[in-house]
Length: 389
Ligand SMILES: NC(=O)c1ccc[n+]([C@@H]2O[C@H](COP(=O)([O-])OP(=O)(O)OC[C@H]3O[C@@H](n4cnc5c(N)ncnc54)[C@H](OP(=O)(O)O)[C@@H]3O)[C@@H](O)[C@H]2O)c1
Image (cartoon, rainbow, N blue to C red; front, top):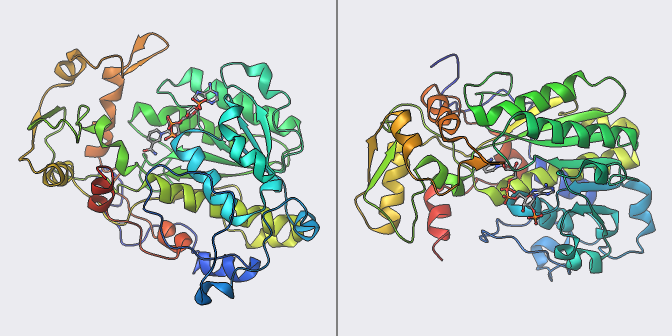
């Protein structure tokens, strides 16, 4: 135990989800697919042909518009924003799990969703920065996947989330999945020294305290493997330096890095399972273990920042080391606006992330991702090498 957190646990304390993907596949005749090696997911409009092994699991889901049987048993799923790395990944995997006609996809650039529209999804416009657009965005949606506003502020971001949640409630959404973040240690912990976690914890609390019948599932998405630049003073695989200057010496508890597309896949599976179960059989919601709960999805292993940098160096064929600097020194570097939000430089606030890592907030491993995927999550080095392909 370090700072009250369980370090590199073999098993977290999330509710057990035995053989989730297989169960889902068998219950709902879905196909268990191998991991995709793509780092940027693309929408697939047609299901792939199947081999003899998968045929048994595939036949029922019809991805077209006329599957009335599915319409009877499925809740309508909304995704907002259906854009960006995580949103696009969730969408891609949802399209493998449910008919496109059951999806309402909301984004501030609806044109980017034309493939999904052609496949039968309903597309709508909304913008977190224009709150009035959220007043009608979730009409007809039963289960909403709400992806956090991409920012590093606290108040502005929380207000954006609150507005979306209250609009969803007013429009009759029954259940919200909210994408939170993997700081704060295990899922029972509700505090963090990381500024970046502030808006997520406040949103989690808002959901938990919300009166009424709308339920929620918070998915704490672990730290993306691909997000190493923000923890390494913008280390660039294609233009690598040999010294990384951060306010951390690289030792001690590290990060259970996790591939973003595997988070998207697991999150989509949770949403699809909830929507499918509750649409057809209200009692089945009892079997969904994450109603009004927090789920923590992490990678399979914790890497210290030194180990992380060692892997980055190995991938680029260079001896890379960490040079510890003070927070003030870090904040004074030229970050080319990358720590600036609505005109305010939050570099010092960002530095609290290293303090959180030092305290073990990101050094928790849960089995949940593996259970949901039905396979070992991809290891860190494989993901990093994949970024250079
Ligand atoms: N778990 C982690 O390690 C980690 C790492 C980084 C970030 N995050 C957070 O997780 C969430 C999802 O991350 P991500 O990787 O998908 O980020 P991302 O790739 O930057 O995508 C965010 C998307 O949000 C959309 N967006 C931005 N402002 C919006 C607005 N005002 N209204 C509606 N949509 C808006 C943008 O879509 P368009 O430009 O197409 O409109 C953008 O593509 C974000 O909150 C992000 O800050 C998590």
